[in-house]
Image 1 (cartoon, rainbow, N blue to C red):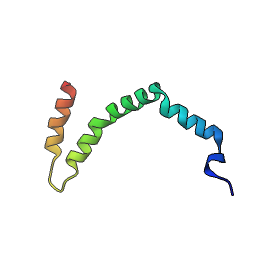
Image 2: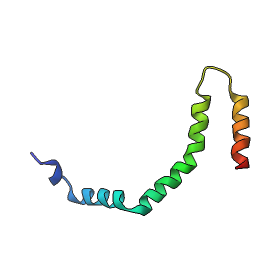
Image 3: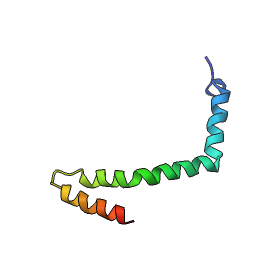
Length: 65
């Protein structure tokens, strides 16, 4: 039976390098900033009530930013 730490040292080094590298986190922040408005609209419209008219208002506000 192999221990977890002996499974794949190269994979562990790769993950450690990513977690500790600032450029990696900068990329994550950039991706999240692109996805956040879409996520917000999806959450806002996830109701049982009609909300399409509100989506247009939000979209206009996003474009103005």
